[in-house]
Length: 294
Image 1 (cartoon, rainbow, N blue to C red):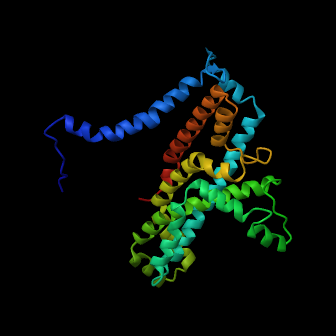
Image 2 (image 1 turned 120 degrees about the horizontal axis):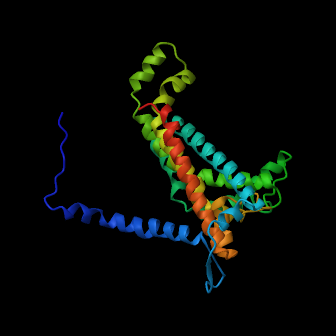
Image 3 (image 1 turned 45 degrees about the horizontal axis):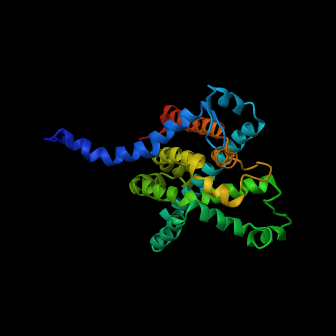
């Protein structure tokens, strides 16, 4: 079958159609990223009156600071936990929906609502529910003998930001998993059931392999989400504490740059963070995608 190609009579027309998106990319991504790279090689005072070129000194100073090494470790734990919780929970919910017939539409609508909530609002909601004084969840946990206090306990604080961040992302993952499940031919699962394969075996031999493209896409999206879009959740719940237990990289960039007014170090951190995300994305496409069944 011959593929039809779109031919423009005017060579300038394709560029005019692309111009709005190119302008947005240039103004809101390329230009700020270039400014951050440039500023990472400079050192200036808080008032911006004196600027000096320091080369790689900002980068060397970063990896000599225990606080930054701790932030790297915290980000690793937070990102893996949040992405895993969001993906597994949304997949289980999508599988539950796949078995429902009458109430599937209502079920889907209720699960999609959290995606419309802003990250800062999601953080505030979970902060109220886990508040040691007025929250309902610490009261329930206390009945089981656990004294919850995320303002004092590092483990409680990390648990809070992971749950709040994953809850915000579950709806997005859920929609894609539902679409992926609906694209799997029912005849394949029915044939496996006739051959004697149970629900667990059908899931691991048919459903999960055919969902691998969707899972791979969501894995990339969730990693980027945990690195950047979770700033508001941390800011609204723990403020990076206690004792920097939830000081993820993107929040440390904000603390050092906008509060500490160390613009050179903050820019260097943002460049390192961008490099980490790019490297993780390349690794996922280079190695993880090999296991994807298209």
